[in-house]
Image (cartoon, rainbow, N blue to C red; front, side, top):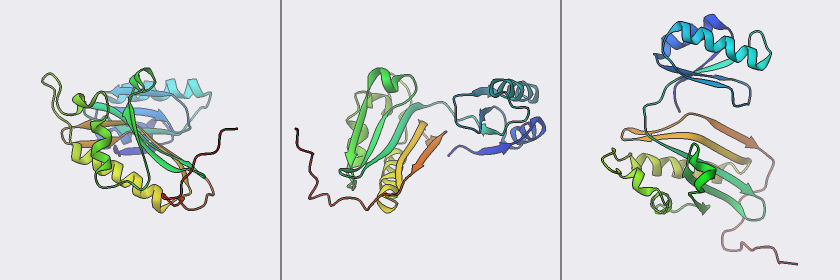
Length: 202
């Protein structure tokens, strides 16, 4: 995860940004799309806090101040749980390409040691991850480790009905999740992978 601090007013926001190191991003702590990126000095942080406050209609909203991640390939990873079919781990391109291209790869739990590598290699945009037209290759070992870990988390904690990491910035030095959403629900254990079945078509 990118290093993040919670702030409740302008002063705390500026202090957090200075502690984390510029440039930073600022996001509303409440769910929603309100965020300001690439803030390079205390005055930019102050203006961003005022803008978020006005957008939310709250005088002193809680905000998240986050160190800006280095440039890399934007990805998304998620776990979704179905009581009948079990959990599915999905990897795909992030950002504007998520829905536009629909470039995703999914696997049922439990993941094997080979599944994470097969997932990123099966993406249409896999060349972006291995160095395309002179760009640096990302740390694919770190990406595979991330997929293995969220797969194991979903196995061990079936109450995680949904886990969404987006965006993930993948670069030569590792992968960094900038935002994580989790939905918990009371569910039963994962179904036996050998007895999965689809519902009959009426």
